[in-house]
Amino acid sequence: MPMTKTPRPLVISTRVRDERDDHRDATSLRRLVQGDRDALADLYDAHAASLFRHGLALTRSRSDAEDLVQAVFLKVATTGAPLLAVRHPANYLHRILRAAWIDDRRRPATHWEEQADPESNPPTSDYYAATEDAIDVSRMLEQLPVVQREIVMLHLIEGFSFREAGRITGASIFTAASRYRVALERLREMMGR
Amino acid sequence: MDEMEHSLLKAVRPEPGADVRERVLAAAMPLIEPHSSRLDLMWFSPKWRMAAMLAILVLACVDAVSEHIVAGQPAAQNRAAADTVRAVEMAAREAGLTPDDTEALVAQAIAATRPPRITSLNEDTLFQRSNR
Image 1 (cartoon, chains in turn cyan, purple):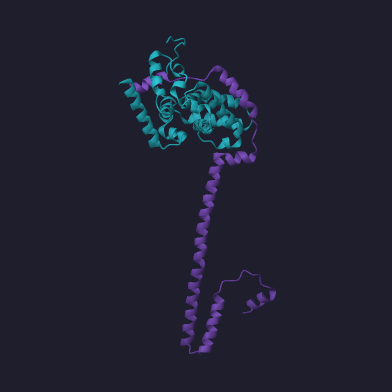
Image 2 (image 1 turned 90 degrees about the vertical axis):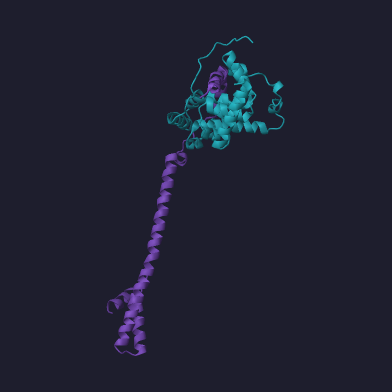
């Protein structure tokens, strides 16, 4: 398949979240509660890409992932004063995204059921990857169960600790670590490494 | 970090389309309303919550300590009163008083060792007490 996209700069190391991010985001949430609309744009710029990748790991569909991102920011815009009590905004936003995904799945006869058939899914590997080799890895990633894809995305790509990723996904730290380990083992088997 | 993790890091960096930002913000921004009442700011502020929890903890500690002190006071008073009554009774017997006189003396000693009542006293009672 010919590559039409230009290669993007590759990030080799996992970005570790720190307290400065939480402080910056908490400030944005405070501004948002006070009615500052630019604060929502700041939050979007800081978290939309990460949320989108999480959504993509859950849905394997760009449009559905974008819808989930929109659902997150609609929820944030309407929550109001309880946002002041949020201690870790990044975790909070990802939890909203996951809750929105679960709500969508619970709806009867939605497009999620159609996606249960892998053949009906449009390939998203091209969106994941910047190089041919990376496309292979991305295709293999897509074949993992959703919870394993999700933990790989949250821990390895987004830099959440197992504890944070566990809180986001509603699992214990041990379950999160176990899912990650199993996911990597399966990927290694697929790649024959 | 092994080779597989490096491969994943290189591969998985998708981002939402450029139009998504406008779409999301256009949908969400009109829903933003200022919710900054002072009560909300206090109630949801982590600092205020921590301060409130500390205040409750301090009050609970003070309450527990004061209960302990108050509970200890009557026991000490009762012990002191019992000692006094016993001493008066013994002194009366050694002095050779009749049992009736001893009983009356002990009753007076008990009345004298009782803690003062909280109820207000009228002027006559105060006058009588001062003349005892």
